[in-house]
Image (tube, rainbow, N blue to C red; front, side):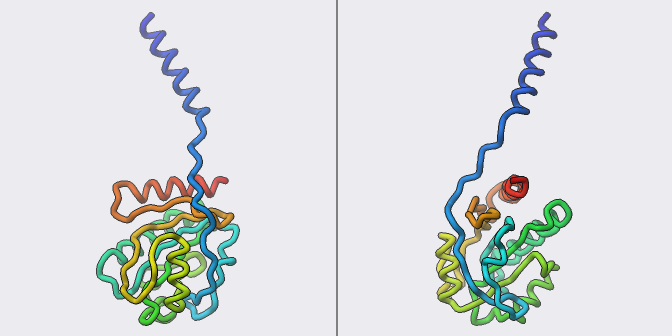
Length: 185
């Protein structure tokens, strides 16, 4: 009798857990709009990202701190989504526009095996980039090269849906989980 009761409880739990909807992601408001320059030297408008789930970060090419690891994580996202979610876009904003010209960003992207149809490296003036950083509620770009180590997840409607701190335990699995949730919507 005890075995039958346990089996019944197990079946009930399985049925109920299948009915539970995942908790919706928070909505932190609209991502900032911007008009910058890509690593190709061409203008890049944030409208290009409309209708796509995308991930953003802030780096600079001469960084010997967290930036190479952050760019490796972006490559990992690029590779992980290549077949299952090829419409996901990646955007890396420089915090060193004086040094990170389009040509320098292109070489940096090549080093990290960037897929240029999905991963964009953007530069502009300090003021333009600062507006973007502050628009994401992350950091000002002021020549100091200090920047947030957070990744930002943006949905198809241009709403910020999550912040993920590099170095936090399990931040990549959480980011990938949330990205997949948005892709299914």
